[in-house]
Image: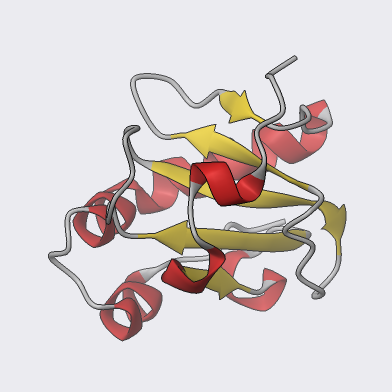
Length: 117
């Protein structure tokens, strides 16, 4: 299990774009963000709660490389982690470009592809 880190210590919520299940095909909200002041490599934040409501206080962070593990917060259930991994693989290039500031938020969102059920 990954160690819990207060969200304020990890990144600022106002710098994140929250993505709905409709956009991602995932059963929960996911947040993407640019590198900004982060001292870690590229990640996405994933709500542990299914549905369209954002629950940043009940979330974990998932790294994109070299593998796709939960790196902070509670672990995701195996089926949710498998779905998040499929979505990350499908959208890795978009997320990396957004992380590095090569895409603005609207451009990244327009390029993201949902996973199929």
